[in-house]
Image 1: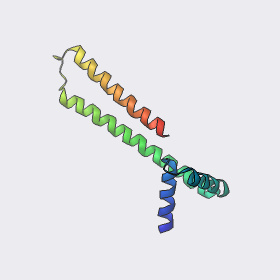
Image 2: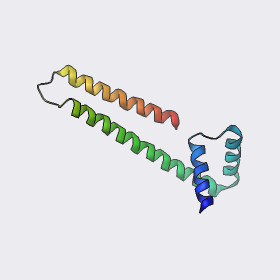
Image 3: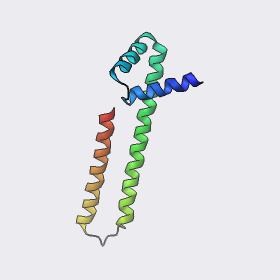
Image 4: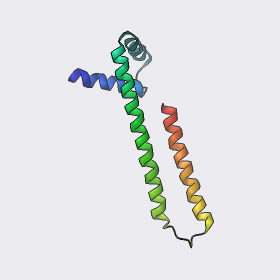
Length: 104
């Protein structure tokens, strides 16, 4: 069990680019030599990517809710304020998506 947890941690370090060049080279060599290990790495890569997608979705919802709470939407608000909130939300979404894209 302890070895399994250590392997998961090592895979996570590889996927999140926390390994130095020597460790990365050894890791890649292990993937080439052990197809089962390579499959486990790919499975964990999918899991990490999905977690990042969920985190992005929650972040977007949080930003959206905060705008709605701060500016209780009513038809009395002028169009500029509503448009400004939409633009800020789009910018926030784009920045978070760009950050995730850079990490993948």
